[in-house]
Length: 271
Image 1: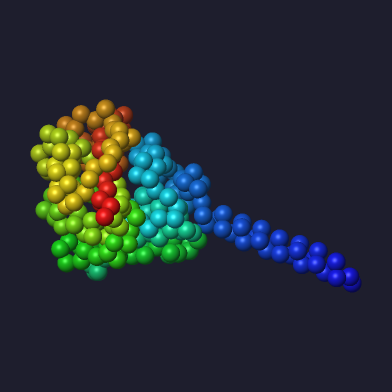
Image 2 (image 1 turned 135 degrees about the vertical axis):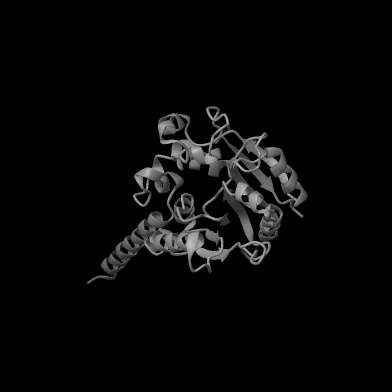
């Protein structure tokens, strides 16, 4: 056996190993399109993309696969969790900040059970997720201070406001972000809300965010819905996906679609 043959064989084996490693890496470092089309997402969740515009929304916020990201209160459904965790799995860091994960019964207990069932279902998608806690005012360290590139919140501000903790949450987000870090938020909007219908006043969000130290650097109409007139018997929950109102009105509500939403991009000022 000649030395030339040995070298060629070694090179071929090396290339095979590199290609295999590359294939494994690609399987983990999925593009956003691959994640959105993935089999891990149910047909029901994919059907909601037309209302929630996940690709456009995350691109607007500036999400990159090598970022350190916190998602606030992903909830039991984990609609964005099943997008963010796989997307950030290979090169980034993804924190899920849960609400009251130590609960032993009730809504928060069931929510955590659903989250953990999802995270334990596939290590290639969810194996690197870091669970933290945001239970205001007791637990507010959602990530090490000044370590995070982006914090994301999807339809949560109305809950913070109804509980009177919105300023505490914003302070926790500000603390976790690096200087120049981004806080991206969507929520149901109505400047004339009564504060109990699930909608929020965009002007109030901007005011308290600025008081917390943030600068609003961009807004988008990606998640706007002009069909939503904001006047519903059971508030925003009258609309899909909850459909809390009269069953006779469900088809009408489905025709409207999900709520009219703001999409804001705030920044923690660079030092």
